[in-house]
Image (tube, rainbow, N blue to C red):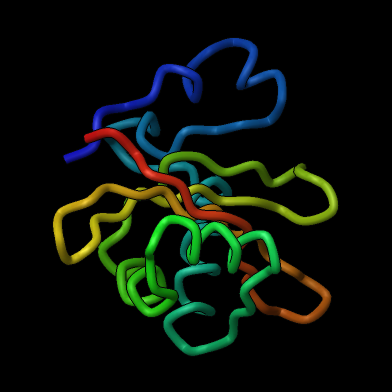
Amino acid sequence: MFGRTSVFDSDAALALGIRSCATRPALGYDKDVQSLFVTIRRLVLSGRYIVGQHAAERLEERGVLEWQIVDGIGMGRCLAERKDAHPNAVVEVAQVLADGTGVVAVWSYIESADIAKLVTVYFHPR
């Protein structure tokens, strides 16, 4: 569906703490890497999320509806996680909208409130 983006596999990305979920070992997986995506997906699907001002503007600008992003996270694919990002850990999720358009939704995890926050959405070439 989505090809792997080379920036997530570069030495520079790894030095910045960006880990690709797509490159975990075939036998087993790194539970620490996978847990952030699983946590955010669980929170979003249970309605425990907020949409940031920037994300709301990008959704409107790109003609994407909030429900499409929320609904699509269940079938989304984790591209990268940045657990050390400040102020909150971040996960990037590749999704396909109902019309077949590929997007990437960037979510952060607000640990103190145990909620997910939609940071931005951008189109992803398929």
